[in-house]
Structures are given as structure tokens and as C-alpha cells.
Image (cartoon, rainbow, N blue to C red; front, side, top):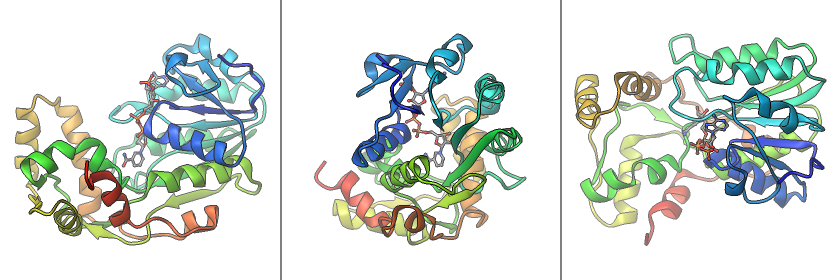
Amino acid sequence: MSTATSPILVTGATGTVGRVVLAALQARGVAATAAVRDPKKAPGDAVSFDFTRPETFGPALAGRERVFLVGPPLVPELDALLAPFVDALASGPRRRVVYLSAYGMDHPSTLPFHRVLEGRLQAIPHLDVTILRPGFFAQNFATYSRREIEQQGVLFFPSGAGRTPFVDVGDLGRAAAAVLTGAGHAGKVYTLTGPVAWSMHEVAAELTRILGRTISYANPSYDAFRAALAGASMPPVLIDYFFKVYDMIARGLVADPTGDVQRLTGRAPRHPAEVLREGFASK
Ligand SMILES: NC(=O)c1ccc[n+]([C@@H]2O[C@H](COP(=O)([O-])OP(=O)(O)OC[C@H]3O[C@@H](n4cnc5c(N)ncnc54)[C@H](OP(=O)(O)O)[C@@H]3O)[C@@H](O)[C@H]2O)c1
């Protein structure tokens, strides 16, 4: 449990992003407290925290000067889920808040929740807010699509020939740790990407090399995508969510690598081929 000694609070600490942020802080020798629904699941110092239980906010925030804020995925009403916690930050003292948004979600035609949350946080005058907008995680293929890839030999995403600079989550963690521990980041927005923009054709070709058998890119139409996901009993609201994410790639809204990972971490971002090899070689 928390001793409330660390000034840094990391939300989502049992998840993909929160875990790498904690690890990157630890690599810098900086202590942080994990804000988690079940403190037993956290690796080190932890405090009970739930976006749906406002009574957990006060104890979790007591003594914290810096907060890494990440909301769970696949929640189309993420702005509503996080609103009570944003209100708690608004009525609290000056703090540094680093919010994990997403590349492309500031575009008016995409899912609105990150845009809404960015705006709400930036409008609170006494918060020093930094927005991190990572691209599509290069680890997503191993985390979420391993079965389709390994058992069916297919990448099933409606992203056309669009390219995007898949980012290594380790780079994301190192960039977040740099912002949480360094100076001069208030009011900044960083777009965190890998070094090259790849289409799903290139991902399929790389997976084919790694696995030693053909992995094809299905590139389904919206109707075929929807039918397949509906057939797997996915609710329409989530099918729409996924489609909008992949459609951003198809429309070229998230196509450009940036230098922000290098600028923040002092090292070149990892190549997606390296991350794919790590996720799929001899597993
Ligand atoms: N995947 C991508 O390519 C990508 C790209 C850009 C941005 N993003 C953004 O990254 C975020 C997802 O991060 P992730 O991949 O780390 O997700 P994740 O691995 O699914 O982890 C989600 C975390 O949120 C916690 N959580 C869930 N509900 C909570 C609640 N009510 N109160 C407090 N904590 C709660 C979970 O804790 P429990 O252990 O208690 O469940 C877990 O630690 C989303 O906002 C998404 O938009 C993702």
C-alpha cells in the first residue's frame, strides 16, 4: 500500500501504458505510486483508485505534485468516465498533469473523447498540462491480434493502403518519464511515433518474414469488417469505435513520423520491425 511519499501518481498502472511509464520512471531512479483498482495487482507502491469511485481521489492525490493520466481503451464515453477525476484536479492545487491522448484524435472527424479531455484539462488555469499523443502501438499486433495472425495467417483491419508510424510502447514510457521528471513541458503537445510509416501490407510482409509463412492483409470493406465483428458478438458501438480508429490510417490522418520521441528521450525511436520480432519470434 501507499506510503504517500512519492510525488508522482501513475494511473492505469496495471495496463500496457502505465506499466511502461512506471518502469521508465524506475529506470531513472524515480519513485512513483501506482493508482489502481486493486492495489494487490500493482508491482510496487500502490494506492486504491477507481475513476468511478470519487471517494478514492482524495487519498490517491494527497501529496502528489504530478499525475500521469491514462484512461482505459474501448470506452466510447471515456470523457464521461474521467470527468469526475478531472473535476477533482480542477478543484485541487497546482499540479503537473500528463495526459495520454492519441495521435489523430484531435481531428474533428474522429472519436471525440480524447479531444474533449485534452480541452477540459488545458482549460484548467492552475494545471501544468502536457498532452502525449502516441500513434498506434506496434505491440498491438502481439497484444490483440496474435490469434488471427498465428492461427489464420491474416491481418484483418480496414485501413486500406494507409500508412502510420507505429510506436513502441517502451518509447512511449520513456517519453512520459522524461516529461514527468523534466522541466519546460507545461502547455506542450507531443506526438509520439516510430521512425517510419508502414501500411498493413508492410506489417504483413514483416510478419511473414518473422513467422516463416504467409501472413496476408485482408483489408476488408467497412461492411465486411462490421459483419465479421458482429458475427463475433461485438456490440455495434465498439465496431464503430474500431472502424474509426483504422479509418484514420486509411484516410492518411496519422501518417507522419515526428521527432518527438528522440527529442524527449535522447534516443531514436524503435523500428516497428524490431517490436514485431520481439512480439512474435519463437513464441
Ligand atoms: N493501443 C493503441 O494503439 C493506443 C494508441 C494511442 C492511444 N491509446 C490510448 O491508450 C489508452 C489505453 O491504455 P492501455 O493500452 O495501457 O490500456 P490497458 O492495457 O487496457 O490498461 C487499462 C488500465 O486502466 C485501468 N482501469 C480500467 N478501468 C479503470 C477504472 N474505472 N478506474 C481506474 N483504472 C481503471 C486498468 O486497471 P485494472 O487492472 O484495474 O483493470 C488498467 O490498468 C486509451 O486511452 C487509448 O485511447 C492506445
